[in-house]
Length: 415
Image (cartoon, rainbow, N blue to C red; front, side, top):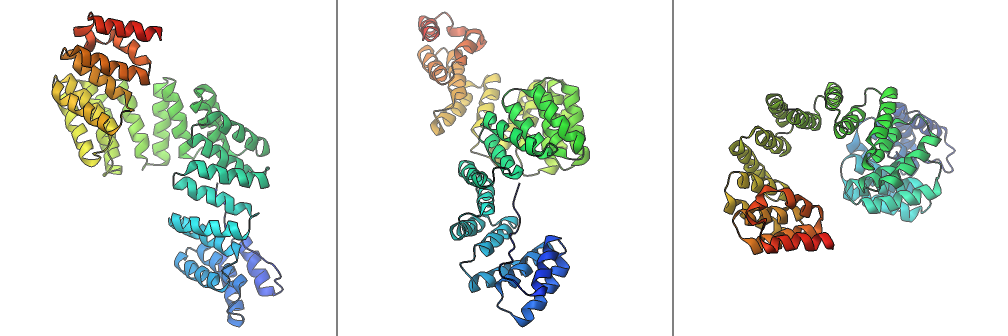
């Protein structure tokens, strides 16, 4: 939750400015702008009046005028923290995040105890994917306003993004004690519970939010994700249908529907859903990637491979897609080409255990015992479950009785 413009009335004794401030507070921006501009005719260098003009102009959608006014006001009073803050709010709204960050820092330095500057610093840092830094800003704001629902929400949201779900849950619980009807916090609480593997409890949180705000698409979307994980396929499909009723442009909901349709063998419907997703996101790779998954489930490996190669044309650095291409090639018996895929992945990142495992599968099928055993050990050292997987994987049948393979399984089982 963001913090809006900070207006100020320090030592204002002029009726026009007082009325302009009241109009801004009521969001009557036309009246505020008229009153502030009248005042500026007599006192054109009044920073207070310029600030109110800029706030009102932005409220009326004239952001370019607001930008120009803020620049003039800051030239007149560069040490005014509130001006830098308000200018930062507008820059953030316009997507100029680096500039917004610069002015929020100035606002903080000029007014160190101004909590709104910390909140907006956190918001911009989070948008820049600097979530750890954002969290520290929110904590500093929370220290000054411990009873703020918005700040507890922001802390919880950031912690969710960092995967710290238990900590996030505590902040959403506090926020809901302060404001029991806050649906955004209910949704955030549901996300935390889902992250903790408590999808049934998450359903209760999402359902409570939907009861109060049934027209908010993201609540239905998150509900659908939890229903999917619980294996309630038809209910999940209904949830994503509701998302699309509320937000027909949600290609994410179509992707989720396509995956559910694929798992239940409704392949033609899944492909139609992905076609619609591609229309909504023509430059994206997700519809193509999941189309490959549908073809793979249908047993049409050549079509799956064709779509994976198209994905890699659009996103050559995707190791995940490259791994799937290797799997498709392996299933087609094109083992040397599959091995090239896994080797390419590992040349970019040795910390990709699935590529080590798949490489071991290829080597085993080729009868290259020592190399297969070494690759499997590398996978298992990073993720232990690959040893159990290898025990039942038919790819290892050609080397299953080889002493080095048997010894590896015994040795890692003992470790």
